[in-house]
Length: 79
Image (cartoon, rainbow, N blue to C red):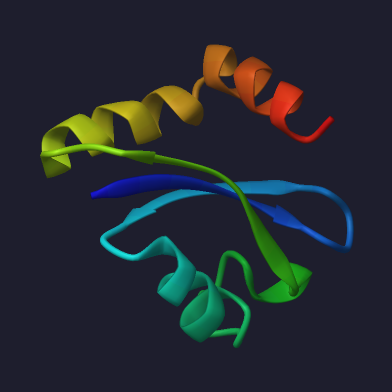
């Protein structure tokens, strides 16, 4: 399971998610407007990915990246 960070080409906002195949999810769902939360800021680019053996570990990391400390970490990715 992958945890990924997307960045909007429009306003550099970021989206954190998890998927078995983040590049497929980006191309077939996020950038085609099938995801409500990312639809308004198409196109998106994958700027960071991490791999985890279990879904539970990936979910913990996803939750961290959405926290205040995780946002500080993500801010350094966009630079």
